[in-house]
Length: 322
Image 1 (spheres, rainbow, N blue to C red):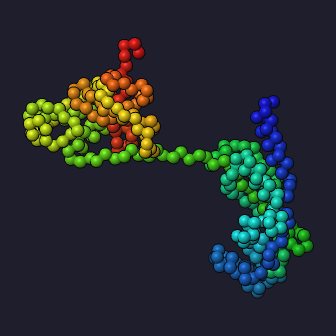
Image 2: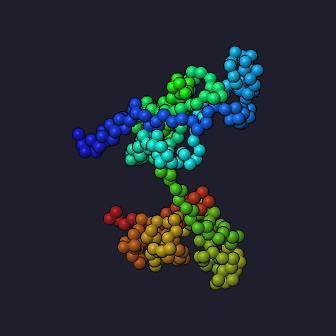
């Protein structure tokens, strides 16, 4: 048996040792069953059975007194916030529970969600009943994959007793202790370019994976960045030609800081000279800073950064040797 398998077996054995163990020792309610608390419960849940508050109605059904709603059995033994966050410091009654939680956390099961609860009621509670609760582990399941993450189902049985130590109710309580799935953080969006009426055509062509160059309709001068007027003849008339995608590396720099979450670093930012003669700034893809060489042959590629933005990038052109 490998050391890792031995450790896993040892951990499983330590968990299994909790089955049948009391993790919350018998704890009394802070107050006996009483009518004011029953009234709050009945009003909160809009219960209509008169036997909960009307002694005559209760007597008419053969009861000796008003009765608490059955599902209220938990309410009599619940602790307030301070008691909940400091159970061991108060009485030590929950020491076993704290140990189990620590052991589960050791295995990475740091999150919890309740999955189901099943009650069996032996008798109704009446004002004056003093209730105690005790909790025992009945099962700890094997590790399994769930929608929330890898986890184990932990089942306990809570037993409710009266002042004569007679069982009044039992509750099978099941929780999933799990390792929360790591949330994949969505990659940040690239900074948005300033798109206007003069350059909109260029970005629309890019979405179609076409790299276009603005051309003066009067003198045929190619120009980039795009603009409304030809810098050579001052004409406002223009059309476009589609670039071949062949280029050379004219210059480049390597950005290290400040880092933007949308980019991978080190980031090679290049001035690329197209075969047609114009230049543009773009990223180099698949080219490390050590591999970048002035004059190296490049070829056009595309990055669909997000549904609203497609940009040209350039890679090293394949050589005859490749």
